[in-house]
Image 1: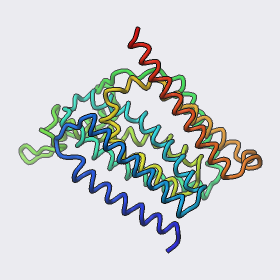
Image 2: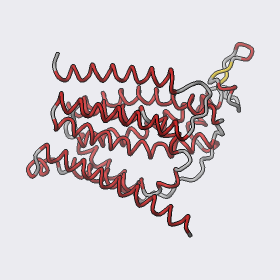
Image 3: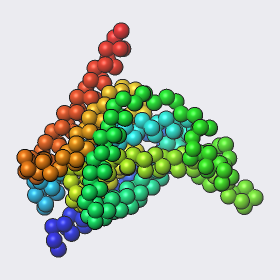
Image 4: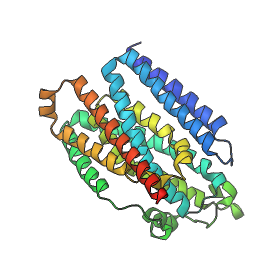
Length: 314
């Protein structure tokens, strides 16, 4: 068994065990998750991801290990931005708190499936047409500037959502949660509840975010092992991260600015690949990317918290 095969095998075992643990013990039906529980679960997922980093370092070497860590931190930061939109959707459709875990776990399972599909297609496309990296780089720069100057998200109006309109046009949607069910069958005819709509919206939103996150991690590494593992480990922690941050989304108002700077940096790095390879070794590029991610995300979080604290004093 090669080192790559061993890492993939361990990753699949860890992933399967983590999902069984999450579905079987950490996501009890209709149970309201407290901040303390969410914190413990978030620490569990982060510790699991960092433990895999150590394993990657040992089996694949320091360069691959650092690529994985950089990719994971990038994806984890984007996941926090993802949470903000999740909160808007769940609040807009007035989902009861006891059903949060149910819609999130299904939405996250769908997100993992879509991520694997997109990563597979994206990596295959880049392997065949390397020039696509320059397209991805330009897209990241555009996305970064757009994100940096974007206005704060307002409350979402379900009646204006295009996906919701599409679902209402083709499916019999009922205006209630079906007591926690996604599909109800009065008179043996299927009808789809608001929880079903929310799951579809969460999955759709993650597809949109994947269009940013997958090119971003490919700007750090084109190693399929790194791309798959860093993406999926970040997505796995989304549910607990939601419960931890749902009441504090407004306290991280500068986070998107930090993420935007990182996206622009990676985009510029991808466009200037030829010159970057001349000036920096592969290991130096990975370390530089890691430092930029840590500096930008860390600074934006600290500035956000200080700004919020200052407002509270006033």
